[in-house]
Length: 447
Ligand code: TYD
Ligand code: MG
Image (cartoon, rainbow, N blue to C red):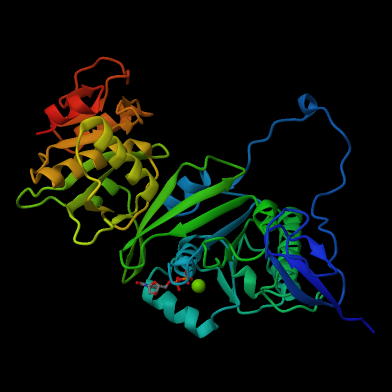
């Protein structure tokens, strides 16, 4: 008879201990060990086949075979389609639309798909599918099962072109006694699925739950085991959803996919700039348009700032969609280098559309929005900005400036502010390019 053992697993790195410790000896994290009852010790992951030592030059070059999905945004994020045998993990907050995204993919892709759901019943999924109203695939099979052995057995029988598992946390393996969703279960089930994917060259998409601090639940090692880690996020109160790659063995991690949640599911947004900018009837202070880049795609976004006198002794600083520390840095630069006493003011900053952007080129537009709100003078709505701001108040060059300029020109802006350190080939732009070096001069040019 199998003997039950109590084991402790680090939630961060997946290290196993027989006793509880405050700190994981493997990764050094504190308070990460969780107790689990294990019947059999988990088998080693043996998905990598035994190979001989080879010289890299002697290997023949193969291009990864990819399945091009019907979703352009997904293809972009994955680097051109789903690589055969790749395991993609997609994480995101509950209710953000992971299941919707994948069901839509399954219904639209004209290939044999096995959609495994451990979270919803078949009739629930059918109801959702009816709502999505995108039945185009005659070969979309559903399987509501949580045993990883049964899932792999059925997958081997059906041999689908793509296996979708919603979610890895609901699967359990009979090799281990602990409950579904525990570190040892996730590790074991992921190991089994990865070996299935590699042996049969079937791509697999796994949904992963995230913890309250935004990490994919389960051991960090899960993210090391899979080939691609995607994150699906967005503000729940807004309609936009961003799909980003955090890790991609087959492509870049700088591309993002943009979707809008509508009543028929997720709609792809191919021209984000059109959607993210609201053309107003009258100009108001505190708004500025930034030309940001996400991967290779330029995107115009609107920044809104509100600077007002603080009622309380402690001025408030709050930023939505923008790094709060960066906002504080910009305020300090404004105060020190341009002499604006903002220390006693409340400052609120908002990137419209509820999206999060990390492009440093946003700085200049943020600065313009702050100044505009502080002075209560609107920035012309025909201006846009792309520049990073340094600690000494200098405006620094940004990457791919030419693409940004072209996008602003295409959307009919009259003037773009960039750093005077940016170089680009001379050609006839119909947009005026204002090159600035220091923020003092920027102030003169802005209003
Ligand atoms: P869901 O895909 O169930 O999220 P996850 O799997 O990430 O938990 O997302 C469901 C949310 O999306 C739900 O709250 C309602 C919304 N939704 C729409 O707005 N329109 C639709 O057509 C569908 C299917 C869902
Ligand atoms: Mg779901």
